[in-house]
Image 1 (cartoon, rainbow, N blue to C red):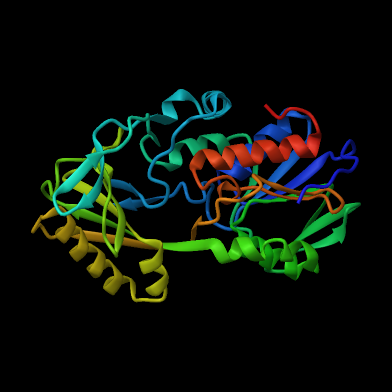
Image 2: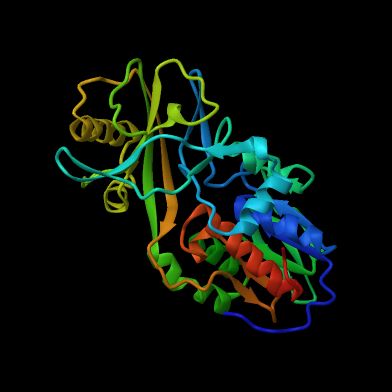
Length: 340
């Protein structure tokens, strides 16, 4: 839903969520002379550009890589993150059509953060007014000015506009808690399409599979497996592999014990790759809001009469770059001038 109204007197914006969409919005709003404050419930920025500390290094538990099809995205990263924070992920990628039947991925440059996926998101957050460990429970006020109320009841603001970059289920809950039921209803269909994902990082002392560094697999349990240690800047002893479960299996096991879930995923990895190696260490993570299955998303939402916007990769194809495209388009709508 996109409305038009006078945005010429927007001088301050609160951004909820410090993933790539939130950080992009903050940077581009700064470029337009607008103060932006980013609120993040976790310890630091990144969203699903997430890595977990593991023995000897880190493992990328969320987004596995990103592509760059929009030249503006590359320019943005080079300018605000720096060329040293991301690099191409070299190696062979494949997808499985059946037992021992593999084909190569299409030839496309794939990038990762260096030395971990969070590297470029943390670089993007430098010089951004970021308030971490702060969960926003509701919005108070109206289009003339909105304050943010935390889960502890603390109030900050008012702001001239609010941008929400949380997944649609969390965005809808926030809008409902704020009494904005009509806006919340706009997200009902998007919420139905959001899918979970179980992720496991497994450490092997020797090589379990050497043919590809990343694979889309044909399995009822696993959708993706990758040699995280093959990414640039990783200097692991042995190999860390990251496994992502299918959306359907993740949903069926969404409340399953992490140890049991990990065990099933490891056994499936062994069956898919043909290895009999057993990992010596495991790390698990459950993504409740991993991706959207709805291809018909509008790139962004700008409710101009309420001065509330929504951005995120779920609105723009689900790819990492989609978060940048969504936030850029939203900033353009807010400022009514080209954003970048």
